[in-house]
Image 1 (cartoon, protein in one colour):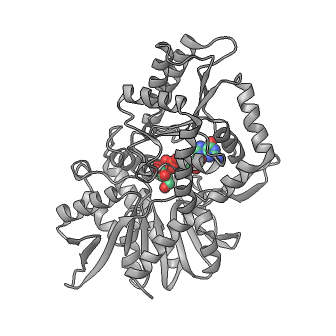
Image 2: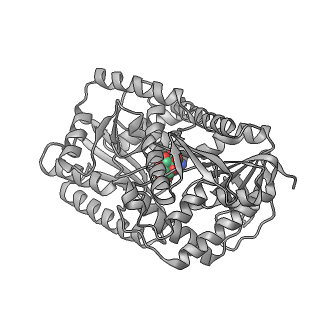
Image 3: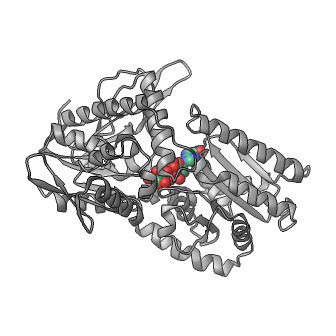
Length: 469
Ligand code: GDG
């Protein structure tokens, strides 16, 4: 396969392996927003995407799909355990989400992380053309920018961090804190979701490495006394709005939304939560607040139903196994105490759904509950807004999401404050149509104007300014 001017590096390839009924295999592009955002540019620049195909011990040759070269990086079963489930999802993920769950620090996980990051960096260095551009994504690959720079000093390197970056007092726990900062600083532009994340990163750089920081610019010394500049600032990510607008207007999807309402017994208000089953998403706090509203009689199952989609996630990590048990115990108790033959308090769905069904759920929901304890951005909030073409519906949004920086007309809430959360849910349930529409109009303007292609253009423009070719 030839080299590319533009190479994306992410933990996962943007494809899923589909095995048919007779065992035949096929690769299908997964409908993620990142692919949609980068696709036009990938096609134009003969782009390549470096990533893991999603299955342990799978060694595949590069292949092409929809005009993009896919370069698979293999992981052994032990590397999946140590690099991916271990260091990425049981060390970095909890630490960077403000230690909501205790991070596990294991030296052998770190060793696997270094080794796998090197494999990704080598694959990218081989794939990129002279003076080309590499865009590295997310916390699984924080060492890759510096590793690519060592192998290929000619290329422009961008890095985008999809999750929060923690305050220095927490970041300082990481036994490999200096190595990770140096890894990230290999990039010309380091993008974060919120201005606060960029500030925390720059503080860590100043305090730990003692590099000079001026505004967003870091002076990074080379060993020989010369220096280069790396920029760290916020580029809040968004969604590809087109499929959401299209699906929300489709008669069959609208009919499905009506059918969902009907099958729930036509409650006067449907509340909805859609999350990966993750301790950062605040599902327990949400359910607790809702359960108290029912037991206090402020809400009744005759009028209101909460639909909670908790899509399966990281099921081999202990913290996720425990979380699932806790949530399912709480849901069982609340339903047991409140259900009638015809009405259920919480319709809990530990399942993943096609996007059509997700949009039907968004359309059916009068109130969307996004009450994460910490979230880099939260795209579900933006997807809900995109589908509300009639300007009806209320978004209850945690202050601790990146989205809260932009979506100021939501009902903003501190999810740790259960009384506050209960009041926010009541405010949303009781909001007049006029007030709903005033807020939703402003929210829609924000989401439709700042879509994912505006995000990727802004990032690549910044990259071009720091490292013009
Ligand atoms: C990370 C950061 C940041 C969920 N269940 C189903 C389904 N989904 C889709 C949603 C949404 C996506 O998954 C989840 O995105 P979020 O942004 O809400 O959260 P994370 O997965 O934690 O993503 C986050 C994001 O990266 C981007 O930078 O915003 O803060 O944590 O698109 O719709 N989609 C389908 N079926 C499901 O059952 N089809």
